[in-house]
Length: 246
Image (spheres, rainbow, N blue to C red):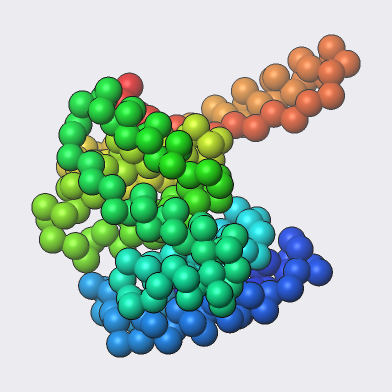
């Protein structure tokens, strides 16, 4: 389980002069209002906002956003009020928490692409501050990673919503690693047999694929060196969902 020190240490690693007291106060408040609540996994509910906050540090977000990550479920799942969040943590933090709460309350029930696109546009338009979207993506990412504790129907509906709404938003924001991970998690719950088959086939051919990528990188690196071009070439393997879509 992620701890507060993991979050603050990570923030200080990329922002050494950051005042992490706001994060510490947000943690204490979140622990207080979520006291007694547990996740379906049996873990204390506080484990979720801590995971979201740590995700935000991986995205190198500012102190206010990380604090909002710790508070993001307080309006929806506790007796906390927006006015109190603003009084204790400032208007900027409160606005992010309020924005995440409003997005969480939106209902999505269609698989039609046009309606999904409209929903994506609506979510992006609602967020006057892009940090709202980043916090919501962190929330959805952790919920997808712990989706196995939900009933089967809930797993399917959340995975479908994630695939249609949140994975594309992550892609539009340029967070491609998150888009890929969300898509693979969705495939696992929506098409488990296909997921396992692709995963097994990839494992069998991993060495061959990795050698092919290394060989191509070596050839291209030599060519651009001969051309006097300074560049770095990186290779990557397709993620499971992209192979499935092919």
